[in-house]
Length: 180
Image (cartoon, rainbow, N blue to C red; front, side):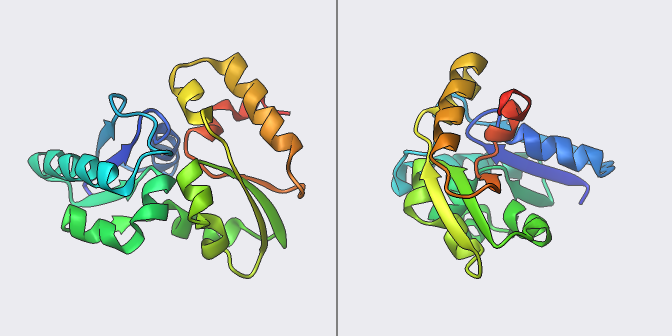
């Protein structure tokens, strides 16, 4: 990987960029944050397909040799279709972190689409999973409204049945230092 393309609906994918840098990546990173159409968590599949096609064209102009999805919503809606949209494999951040899920049960805070499509229940079928849709949370984080985002996230956390909580949208770790 010399030229990596990472996409997201806005700033959430920076949590992926940070990890890549922390792991010592030395190549070029091309980041596409689609703040014009943010949030993606409640968009239709056809709306997102158009957006992803535009991102694919942009990545081609940058000659990226590897693509990482910074958006779990697109994984929940497209999964294997992403390779066709981008004309190359799209790395799945969930697959890269699979070994870290060592608890038997998790509450997952995620976008509406990820929750509706049971992204984490499918990803971790051997685990007990409670998925909670968090409307507007990514949007508040995107707008840098940290107090409102933290308050909303804490309300969702209060609904959790399990102590182990997965922040199922890449935006959510951006407020982790504020959460209870």
